Image 1 (tube, rainbow, N blue to C red):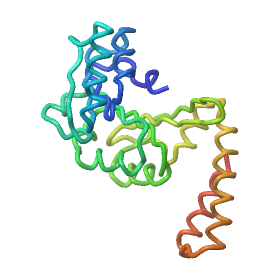
Image 2 (image 1 turned 30 degrees about the horizontal axis):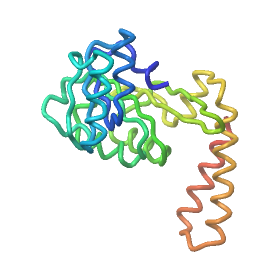
Image 3 (image 1 turned 45 degrees about the vertical axis):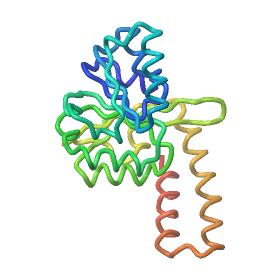
Image 4 (image 1 turned 30 degrees about the vertical axis):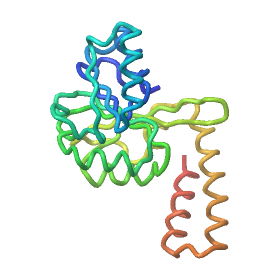
Length: 209
């Protein structure tokens, strides 16, 4: 899913690259021209370098031991992928890299805090251009294609509905089910009235699609 959104990049940075499979596969397929694999941990970065050598792609890649986009030359990337991390982590990475508002394509695949990330993006001058869903067994994943300084969708579901994503109904059902359970627990527990109201608003929004 992320690879589909990333095609056509001149220079792609895969933040939190882990084993480097995403940029390596894109390079091998001729979908991008150059890649930077970045990771905060030396072990995964060494694994990515080894896999690139095995695939014969090391000459088309650079490897950066860094926290997010905190490395020299990051501004030269026209496409940035942040996949497999929490929404709050993604927001922190982008907050430290304001240049990402200046035309870079951002492919964001949050594992948590989706709505909070969408709200943060809108407040900070980013816009969701499109979104996509992918299924692995019973689990669903969402990716957002985000640009800076552009009009776009406020919520992931708005973009998914506009795309006519075939997994949207399943996604909405799963989100509503989780949120209904969470809301029941919040109402029994010590959560604040503001948190409960926010959860109710989200549930009501999800029921409108």
